[in-house]
Length: 333
Ligand code: KG4
Ligand code: ZN
Image (tube, rainbow, N blue to C red):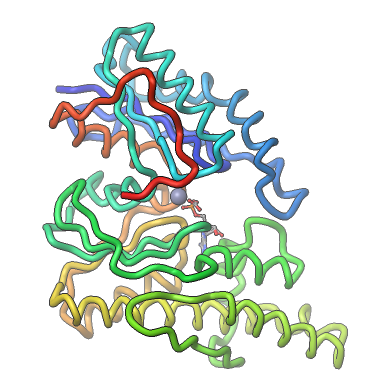
């Protein structure tokens, strides 16, 4: 019955989770609202807030799980990829806790953990499966052969899908982070009002920078003709932008599934919280005869439960790291 403490601090969420024998008993997430005033995450400020939040988040996760801190058998932490100053806080905490308790340390790759969030709840996907991992920093189609045997078969050549949504919301004057607000407004709009271009990128890779520029010019030209253009059409703009982002993602996912002959298809990462993308995958899955897997909302955006579950599977293999481990801003699978 291994008890794992999971720690996540790669960007602007400080999170701690307790996993007992593969079951998540707590998942505490301290969001950082300080970045809203700056329209994006300010790395220096993120590190400072992690420093404030890390111990209370861990204490709360232990309390919520109704365990004793002496019951913890190992500490799993996000080693990367992410903001280095943010990662340092979580890594240093994990190392100190493991040293004090004399328990092993488990390093976790944040992008692998997003995929492994599918092993928190039933139904769990069987191998091999494809996972479209879409976040603020990454857009990847991952071929998952086993828990830690993953291959990126398609990825963005420039911006991430979440970045395109966040930048669009900034152009529209919406506060950061914009993805959830685009989602909210899109529900009230008509997605066929405006047509944005679909980039023609060969293979399974993505590109979102051309779309971002097209949206920027579209808004600029329309606002020049009518200063109230955004206010009058915000819902239709959000719905049309969201529709294009979703079709770009799902068209490539369909291509990948056909190319690899795989019918188990999953979504992961912060953008998988998007209503249009969730509905779109479900609908495409029904058309294609796929088994589709979409995590609960709380396990889509950054959280420590996915780190704890990844840590659990590594614990079973005794896959530990030493106290000399250091965070990595870039960390390949
Ligand atoms: O995985 P995540 O929490 O952090 C990273 O590792 O990047 O993903 C954050 C991204 C942001 O771009 C945010 O705008 C987007 O996920 N996001 C959404 C929604 N919720 C979060 N995008 C669209 N619709 C949502 N409901
Ligand atoms: Zn993430």
